[in-house]
Image (cartoon, rainbow, N blue to C red):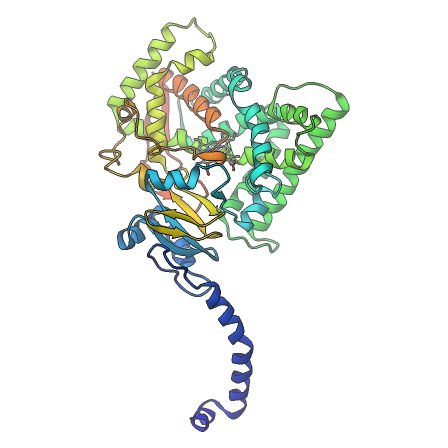
Length: 475
Ligand code: HEM
């Protein structure tokens, strides 16, 4: 046998193969041990050595999104299944029970998804990367400046920026996603840093666009690669925020914005460090731009396709408008009274697939429906499977805001996630969308020039590929 082999590939090569096998066998053995499947885990496939099913997962992002990867496996293996993506054994869970396990119980059962390359992009000192007590302290500080009274006091700033933007839409063809992305960016810059439109904001926007592309690119840290450029842009953004902090400390001037609230907290004993402040400001900038603009774009699309729902929405806003004097600004209470608008927003968020799956890591062995999720394994809460489940949402593909008239069963609808990692921008996002819809549907009518037919799933937030071109005129 050995001689036949030697004849076939040459004498020296057999020795080399022997050495290679000797060197690699222990590695292969260690690897196989690490892939030993603990008893009781759900059915499913761990795919190829090392890569697992990562290539299939990435390929799906080019077609039907993460949901299509999950759907295919759910059909084969059932509601709970295992896979292996991004070098980590992973369990995908869905339904109210899955959402309860993945998102509640504080930090005792699960922690953040733990993606190393995204930590580089979103900051190792930001909410995205930190865990347990550090996360709790940071989140409390951030929520204090983005919710309740702090947000209530900023309603008029959001409204003014919305009106300024909409003026430029009149009588024109606009790409909704492009315009709303600029608007949400202006709003977030204003709320975070009191930055007004101008040269500084425009420069920041350019850097931000480069930075946000990092979320959709391969994590290659070589000069010229989009991910490398995104990290460079991030460093520049951090520098700008540090500059603003320095300037504020020198001048002692007070600003009514999120940065100021964070700086005040910094002075208290339980406060945030400067690194934590700047990294979270950039994270909030990222979190607050594409999400809200995509939601507004998709809602405009759904309303155009459903004229009856648009009429109901217009009736609500005409009613609200009649009770206000000309040019009287909206108040928090008036916005909160727009009950049909909130149903439209909920249904828009359900259908827009902004965050289809929420990643977590099991911090201890967990058990669900008779299966085990071993400590250290990654979990994906497939929120879209629940939001498109016909047993929970009848005719799930239809835009039907009235389905939110009656309360839904608990843990069936979580557009902003849940538990300690729930979105801190939830109130701001809904407020911003409500203000936008009030002025948009009340003053304008629009014609969609080209329907949205495809979503770009390669982005962190799946967005319409054509951006939704519409023609806008006064009603
Ligand atoms: C329609 C708009 C938005 C949607 C649908 C949305 C959705 C989400 C979801 C699903 C999560 C993950 C929650 C989880 O894992 O349980 C999240 C996290 C987050 N969002 Fe939003 N979001 C929106 C707007 C915003 C805004 C306006 C901001 C900033 C002001 C923001 C900042 C963040 C941050 C910083 C996190 C990470 C929270 C943490 O790790 O503790 N989001 N968002």
